[in-house]
Amino acid sequence: MELFIQIVGFFVFSFLISYISFITPMGIGVREGITTIGLAKIIPLATSGIVSIFARIVLIFSELCFLGFAYLWKTTKNKYVLLLENFILTHKQEAVLTLLIIAYIIYFASASFLRYDNFYTGRFDLGNMDQAVWNTIHGRIFETTNQDSLDVISRLAFHADFILILLSPLYLLWEHAKMLLLIQTAVLGTGAFFLYQITKHVLKNKNISLTLSTAYLLNPSLNHVNLYDFHAVSLATTFLLASFYFLLKKKYILLLIFLILSGLTKEQVWVIVALFGLYIFFTSLRPAIASLISFARNDKEVKKFSFFGITTFAISILTFYFLIWHAIPNIRGSEHFALSFYSDFGDQPTNIVKNVIFSPDKILGLILQEKRLVYLKNIFQPVGFVPIFALPFLIFALPDLAINLLSKNSSLHQIYYQYTAAITPFIFIATIYGIKNLKRWFPKIPNVVFITYLVSFSLFSAYSLGPLPGSNKPNIRMFTKPQKDAKAIDTFLMTIPKHYSVSATNNIGSHVSQRQKITTVPVQADSADYVLFLLNNASSKAKLTYLVDSLRVNENYRVVYTINDFIAFKKGP
Image (cartoon, rainbow, N blue to C red; front, side, top):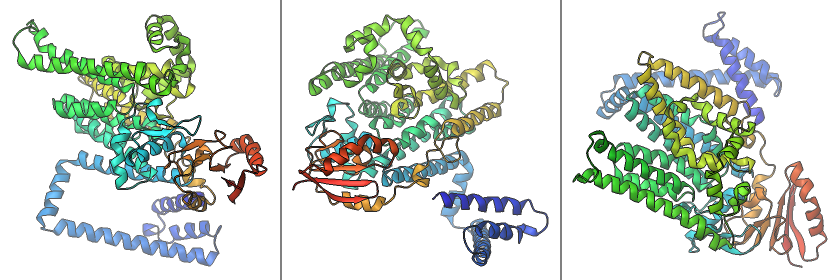
């Protein structure tokens, strides 16, 4: 794959030289000469010459096909073609956005699939999610394996991401972990559509709407979330954007549906849903307050929407309270595992909340630490820090921002994981209202200034922080460093019966997760039916070589398959 990328790059270089050449028309001869010289480094000179000439023939043929297609399109009288042409001409921004969303889904679905195929995904967390969905579709609702044993427990012991239950019927179409990767990519890509509609509704400008939607698709946080396995909470990015859109359009049934879907992605998202309820409550009172009319007046619409808002708030807060204070602790037999990240504030949910509220100096000290300031910079930079001009809309992001910034777990104040999923939608919503405020304060600033400003920061951030090819630190190992013998390893893994228990290295976990009992070595490495190792990096090999050696001499296990860095042990004589 690395050689392929180099060849493509050299071919593009030959294209550039041929176009700026004034010696021959269309670069004839120049392009072929440069291509021949480049290919001669890896194949015989005569063959490289033939390949370069063949490439010219293919290009000429493709150009003729394009000209023929353009001519037929121009001269056709077919009413459907004309309707399509008129639609594109009157909806140019929507047509471009559709192509961008399709391109996004194709790239990230392909990249995610290749990460899986080359063992760059893991049991944490694609395997965990896949196991819960697979168990659910087979009648074992929301079951998973305990991280510290082979005991079967409810996934509620870790997270309340009940959306996995709703996703399980899709396994009737394709019972594979890749289905989750495809769903995640499609849902995240679709978020650009809702962002476009929100921007168009608020700013009444399609060009700015397209610019912000493109910035969304290039957003480093979103891209990293998309590539980092699968997490149910990542779906909240689009669900929350959809919720805000339907709130603006006053389509309250659809709003309620997407708010519920958002809350089902993870337990703390219910706090954000509660904030939606408060927003609805206060905005429904605004006309009454503005006209100095008492809320007690007989206004059915005001009462209806204020009741809807306060009910949404109350139910969401109670749901969050029940999950964190009761449901999850009762299932796992102890407090939520993530509370250990906030031990500086206490060891109980109530104590943590109380100490956070009444310790502003301590909180300010944490936020002003360099690594947390860098985290905030990385979140706001892709939109040029415009959200600071619409701070009230960042209140929706405040719960997850607080969770991340106050955590002792350094992973939570980085943009490379799923922890920004519920923050990203409100960064862009605040950007929309920030632009609206700036346009109101400085009405003479043309729209092209805002567009240029956003494009500049978006492209710079995509390069400096994002994972796309061509960026400063691209996440393209799945293209350039494929796992040796990946197909052979996967073929063997498929032969392991699903009723056998497995203890495996994390990079194998998502390939054998469709079973009731699976854990990660060294847990249960002395009792699982199969113990699997893929020691494809130096750190894992150094840490686990001792365990491999001990199993080799363990009379209860035998080697049943090995190839390069992969070795499989089976329990039995």
